[in-house]
Length: 252
Image (cartoon, rainbow, N blue to C red; front, top):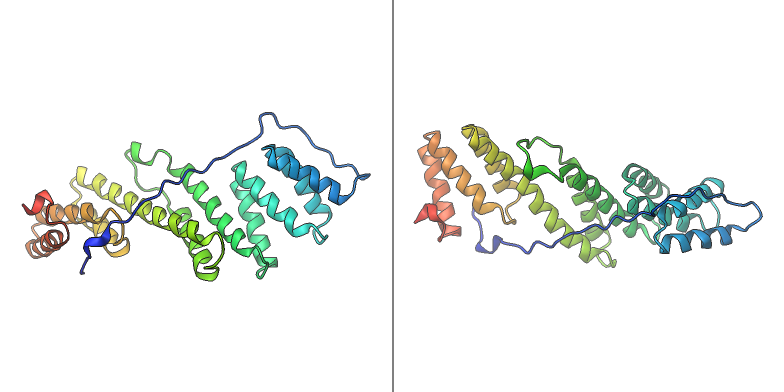
């Protein structure tokens, strides 16, 4: 495998701001008001950060008028409210329903983008203590889903206003997934499980070759092959490390 020196990519910080109202209050929709008035009330609540109250109105409007003149916008706003409240399961269910029923909607790029944000949000919650514990068998399927959601945005909707941000988030996610594999490899090294460590590092080399983690992956492979007395593999990996990272301590 030939690597390029321009492997290193810029990793952008991704901070998802999850907001919710302070004290949820029950909201009742009056039959005496019009759908437009009810929707405008929900929008005001949404814009003020009262996501719970807004979602209550939007959910009831969606239930009562699933095919009304405001139905699509109500559903889009409900997806956003669920996301801001970190109600990931409800958000994904709403998103998947919208995609299934409106695959050619003018805002479908936004819906796929929101799916990526929600899946990342779910993965972030699951991985928040990943690097502080001695366990690296966590499921990264949500990270992969988020990556694929953002990929859908840039492939199917390259001119949308969400494409550039989706691309940047894909860079971050790929590097994060590579980090989980490196963390697992280091976990195996600590337990002298050299074959498992080498395989994890090799996976990073094959799958995430354009991330920051390649140098460390090669180091792990060199060390593991040495411990396993696989001299040819170690020599080949060391040569690759030297070619791409000539200042690495292992090659000097």
